[in-house]
Length: 150
Image (tube, rainbow, N blue to C red; front, side, top):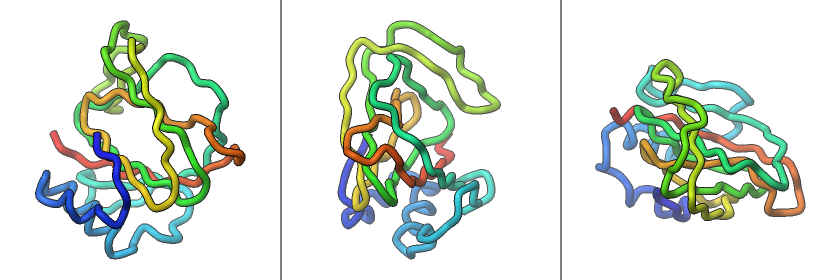
């Protein structure tokens, strides 16, 4: 997991070629002003989901993970708590290869505040749970880049 200021995003180049494509797209400002929905950046290698979500005051103890894609989370408006899970204990939903998605519970969790001007990169098999209310506004506009790394 990488959590940093957007002004430092270029420091994370050369980790993976597809991650470089997403970083270049963001640094060029091509992600600004996009409507809600899916946007192709580089075919199936990099795509972007723009969403407007209502945040929850409390969430379950279930965390998602991916095996093929890394996520880059960017909040465009609002503030969101993104909870990280560690020490997976129970499988809630077996990994679905088609959707690159599985669910587990975790023994340890830590919530970070994600807001405009910051980003979080979650690599495959890093358990996470977005959507937690931590500020006063219960709505967030965010972008999640899906970056094929497998």
